[in-house]
Amino acid sequence: MPKNKTLQTVSAQFDEQVVSERLTPNLLSQFSLDKDELRLALVTAQYALRATRQQEPSTINKPTGLLVLVNGMEQAGKGTAVKQLRQWVDPRLLKVEATVGHPPLAYQPIWQAHTKAIPRHGDVMVYFGNWYADLLYNVMQLATSEKKDKRKKNGKAKSTRQLPTGKWQDYLQQQLTELKVFEQDLAANQTKVLKCWFHVDADVLQARLKDEEDDPDYLYQIDWSDTETLAQFNQVATELLRQQGDWVIIDGSDKTQAATNFGHQVLQAMQKALVSSRASANNHSDMANNIDKEDDNEKNNDSKQGFKSVKIPYELIDIDDPDMDKSDYRAQLAKKQAKLAELLRARQGRHVVFAFEGMDAAGKGGAIKRLVAPLDPREYQVYNIGAPMLYELQHPYLWRFWTRLPNEREDRMSRIAIFDRTWYGRVLVERIEQLISEAEWQRAYDEINRFESELTTAGTVVIKYWLAIDKKEQLERFEERQETPHKQFKLTDDDWRNRDKWSDYVQAAADMLAHTDTESAPWCVIATNDKRSARLAVLDHAIEQLKKYL
Image (cartoon, rainbow, N blue to C red; front, side, top):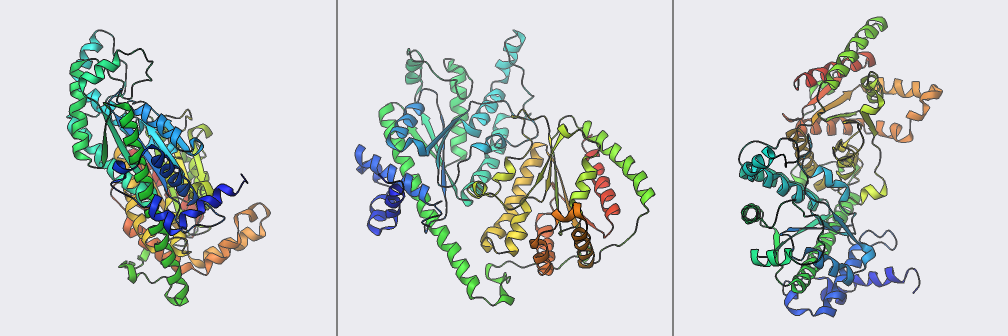
């Protein structure tokens, strides 16, 4: 078969007959499709999803992926079902990941350790364990704490970080609330989620535990042969399923039937994802067509979506213009850097995230350079964020930031992340340059607030800076860069072009500050044309924030 034959075949998804027969969700399909029909429908949907990310020939769908979370009772047919699915579809295009439950990780949300496994748009991924394995591991540790204490006295318990205090029900509810919004944000960013819970009764489980087949590490690291532990797990599972109504429960009593049922569920999830991708693409196309028809003076009119821009605050307009003495600056700088290093090293491993935003040439790079000067390079990572790469565009918007956060499951010893430009690009440059729809950037305020809130709730310190200068000062700095050989690389054509949209950026910054200045992650606005004053102000604020955690 010619190399492009497969893609040509996939393009047939846009033929109306094929769409209606194989790709339109049919809630009764699990009762009507035989094995061969199911296999054909699965492969067709799989390739249609993959085609949503095709560049040539272009498709009418917006790139969309499917993440299948597999959890539930041990020995309930999970492995058999996924093995069967992989035989029925193109195995090269079905990604499979697996984890077992781990103790809670310090200073990070429970989902953070798993973000690298989130599939690209266009892919289907089956993820055994995932963040629910960690959650169930943690809840079971809480729920069986009395038994754990008895084992500890006998010297049989593993040492783990102390779990959250309080009843396990409270901890479970808190985590499920956070996971619900995390998964909703995944879905809103074109990664649809299917959650399958496999279950068998106690008698079936005990019979299968005595079989001669080797079993993989148990997802939740519990003793399934212990009746008391099993009863506790079922109680926890019942509460989880009661609070989250989006789980598909699969009866694993007959593994063959369970595998077939699982295949139907995956098929319907892929079909729904395709319908969603077409609707999203149409909305985006409508937005683009509307923009083309608008007058240039009305391109940034937000009233259609009900969004009202805020009045620009005085601090973004009236920029301080001091001239600090160099010797005084150096004396203060050394003192403040020493204090900052002392506080960072006394934070007892707590994760710290610095986020720098501001106008072009406002001094973000210089401030970061002074911030890290007293630190060992192994203590921190600096991320210079530019336009996303293609593979980053094929994931949820925040994915490229999730995967750069300090992570306890990585060997990297640094637990300080410094972002030179951040996730706020969605409500700044992407908004102004109309790279996304109005609905996407307006939705991003809440998505960003939730993201930062989950970090701070877990114990991460989030420190955000907006550096402001006036337009005249920016021009002087641009000209200086242009005339200085070792600074010329800092100046780009985009920098000059952005000056023509100065007022748009100031307005977008004002809206951003108004919508994302939260109690858990407040903004520090430093508005000065003096580089030295700005650098000292950054250090002063960081010192004050870190003092709160000692």
